[in-house]
Structure formats: structure tokens, C-alpha cells
Length: 396
Image 1 (tube, rainbow, N blue to C red):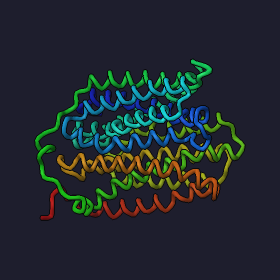
Image 2 (tube, rainbow, N blue to C red; image 1 turned 180 degrees about the vertical axis):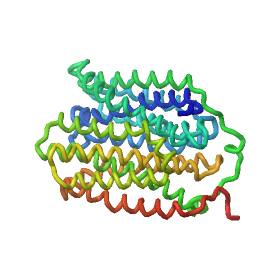
Image 3 (cartoon, rainbow, N blue to C red; image 1 turned 90 degrees about the vertical axis):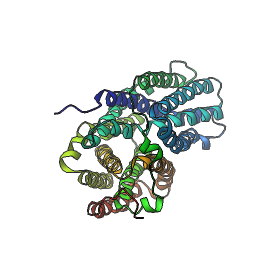
């Protein structure tokens, strides 16, 4: 295989992605449990997770525009510093049983996600045009590290400072953010060019006339939404079916491996088979995950469904992200990438809340059933977009 251009920077981006993913996994594994311990009311236990997602949403669009103006590196550094400060504040909040301070801590950590969500786009910009998919998929291999190391850290650092349970976990998250800062400091990322700063831009109505752009965003956002909907509800459904928390953790760990292990070859598949085919295949696999979830409630059914869910997310998200990089000019980069990532954060918020309500009112079967219409709609959009011409200029 030929050498990938910018491979050193792509490796560092993958390493930074691994640090960020491990930190996020620690937060998602422990924040609600911390909430149960120190919240003034049990109904507020999930508020720290909500604060995290809100932090990501608030950071996403400003980060995109600031990256276009000042370059990606300083904004990546600012996000990692915010993650470090958030983790340190989290330790302090747990020691002092301060619930709302802990929510502030996860809000600050959310900004780390808001900036790190641009790692894949940064990788696509240092590679040759024909290697964009390959670079994006390689950066996401950092998630494999999170599936193994992040889960281990969340479990084995929880009781370091007993009786202040999970303070050690946030100490570990602070350490990971520090490593991310060091990694980002060594990155050689391109500065904005004149075409990005001063080039002409189309309005959103003009941009949305491109079926490919709309489809690319839909594929990435819907993949994230469907994955989050089923992933967040599966452990609760398994608990309701009599499985232990360890059983649920095992299934989620294999789900995360399903999300990121395919990244080792997704980019190569896109180069060989085409981006539309891989994005469509992702939708088919998401539908297959729904079918597996409906066929039964055994441990095997849950495991197969969640692994397929991860693989479907990988193909749909990388396919959509790769297609999106072909649909805007350099000057339009910030607005398109920012709105795309904002949509991902918003759908994560919506599906996180709705999954619990769906389980409560209609049971587990309602969750996989909800996958069918959304995945099939995006599948139809991919077919239509594949036949449409690509336009990077205004009609005027």
C-alpha cells in the first residue's frame, strides 16, 4: 500500500482522538452514578450527562469558525485545556459533594468533545484528495483504544480515593487531557489560506440545493442518532431482562469495538467500492441491528445487535463525513462543518432523552423499530444523491 500523505499528523490526530475518546467514555460511564451519589434529588442524576452534551453543542459552531480564522491547532489546544480543567473541577466537586459544580465540570469537558469532533475533518485536509476517506477512518481507530483502555480506567480508578467514589476516574480523565495537550502541541496542521478566509460563500438555501450535501449530513447525523438511541437504552433493557451490570458493560464494550475496529479498513473500502456504497451499506447494517434486536432478548441477541449497530455507525458516519468534504468550497468549510457537528450533538441529546421514555412507555421493541424508517429514508436519499451532479459554485 502506498504511503499516506501527512501520516505523521494523522497518527497524532488518532492519538489525540484516543485520549479524548477515553475521557468521554469515563464521563459517560460514571457521571450519572456520581449524580446519584451527590445530587439533591435522584431525578437530577443524569443532569451531568446533559451538561456535557450542552457543553459540546455550545462549543461546536464557534470552534468551527475560530478554526477557519486562526487554524485548527490553537482551538484543539483550547478544547483539551477545557477538558483538563473540567476533569480537575470534577475531582474537586466529588470531594466536596457539590452537584452543580460537578455539572459545570462536565459542561467544560463537553467543550473538549466539541473541538475534538473536528479531528476527522482535520485529517482529511492533510491527506491527498483521493485519500480523504482513508485518513478519516484511520483517525477514528483511536476509538479502539477507548474501548479497551477507557473501560479499564473507568472501572479500576473509581475507588482510588474512597470514600470519594469516582474521584480517581476524573483524575485519570485529567491525565488523559494532559496527554492530549502534549500530542496536539506536536501537530503540524495547515494554517488557513486566502481562499478559506476571503473566498465567496453560498447561502444556506443554495447549499441545501445540493442533494449530496443534504445526504452527507443526513447519513452522519442519522447514523449517530440511531446508534445513540439503541446504545443508551440497551443496558437498561438488559437490566430489565435480568442481566447484570457486568453483562451490560461487556455488550457495550463489544459495541464500541464494533464502532471503531472497522476503521482500519473502512477508508480502503470507500476507495475501492465508493463512498455512496459504503454509506448505503451502513444503513443496511443499522437495519440488520434492528432486526437482531427484535428477534429476541437473550444475551446473544443483545450482543449481536449492538455489534452490528457499531459497524453500521462506522460505515454510515465515515461515509457521510467523507461525502461531506466534497460538497463545500474552502470558504464554506466552517459553516458546513459547524452545522453538521452541531446536528450530531443535537441528535445525541434528543436520542439520549427519548430512549428512556420509549423504554418506559413502549418497551425495548420500540427502540429497534424506530431505526427502520430513519435508516431507510437515508438509504433512499443516498440513491438519489448518487445520481445528482456536484455543484461547488453559485447558480448566479
